Image (cartoon, rainbow, N blue to C red; front, side, top):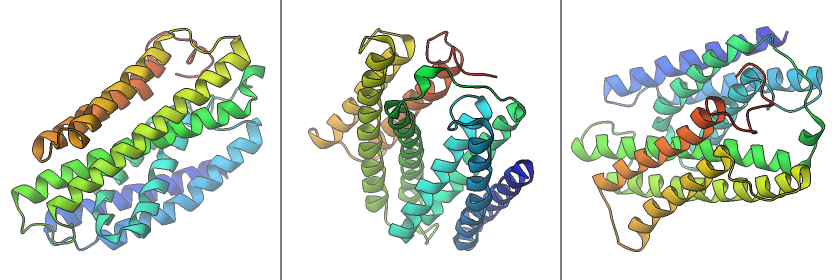
Amino acid sequence: MQSVLFWSAVTAYALATVAFFTAVASRSGRGTGSGAALLALGLVPHAAAIGLRWIEVGHGPYQTRYEVLSADAFLLVGAYLVTALAARHLRLLGAAVAPVAFLGMGLAVATFALKAEVPIIFKSWWLVLHIGFAKLFAATAVLAAASAAAYLAKSRRPGSLPRLPSPERLELAAHQFLLVSFLFLGVMIVAGSLWANESWGRYWGWDPMETSSLVTWLAFAVVLHFRVLHGWRGPRMAYLTFVALAFAVSTAYLVATIVPTIHNSYMVGR
């Protein structure tokens, strides 16, 4: 049943990707509603698949690559749908969200069969906050970059994609997502520090993952500093948003899976 639910979600995300790409290619934005509906439809079996895995293995989605990437995709789609409900003019951002979710699920399936017990130090409320805000950080960073990309497209061809709002509103959306992502990352670092002290008796050890998270947080702070205090606007802020996303991806995926660190020493199938 878990496999059926998982593949149902993957199918819905694939169809949503096609719907959004069709909307972008048509330049009219038609099909945006269908894409958002398909993402919402896929979120239901996806939630059920995560829930069944949680019950089966007795812990949250943070032990195997399948569990981590599946939960990342779930929160990305969930964050997008909340955004689409609150700001309907941003629904076309699904053109970036749907393929990312689909690809994430594709990468996750390779370790679907792997299961493992978590060490005792993982059974902490601080860990739940740490990982939860890490996933929200990654999701909002993707939405910030998607808004920046939409801004560049709209500013170059103002008459295209009428379903998108004005370039000014897209630029503001990119800034707001980036600010929220910066705050989520800060909470993640603090929660992780408190968890580290509870588990290993120290708040900070300059582990590669800790260092990378701090560098990423500082990079986000610099980008926000240029906009808020120096009034930077336009394409250069959009490109800086892409730089911020690159830092986020490096921390959340490259360092977390490739660089030897205590954070991934417990991960199965990385």
